[in-house]
Image (cartoon, rainbow, N blue to C red; front, side, top):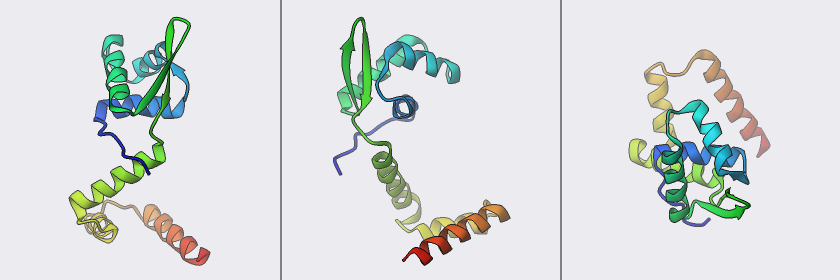
Length: 126
């Protein structure tokens, strides 16, 4: 797996749009982000430029607009960030995180049942 660039929370919102719609142009990115944020088009363009400089995005010119494609797979990003989260807050152990959620009543009975079913399915697959 290649090195994943550091992506800010705001830049992540841009990446989510591009992961969902690969080969999307500037105007489409602005239009989609305008529905969920109050960022100006200039702010969105700045974030796109930052993501290009960081190596998270590729871009090409199509007529008068740029078209963006992800340079980082969403699954790779999620794997790295999940591991980072576990390491920072739970000493790298998933058990500690789940136990914390259980002890603080953060999981509903349905979520516990779903988690149990996922674990059972995984166990039976091996």
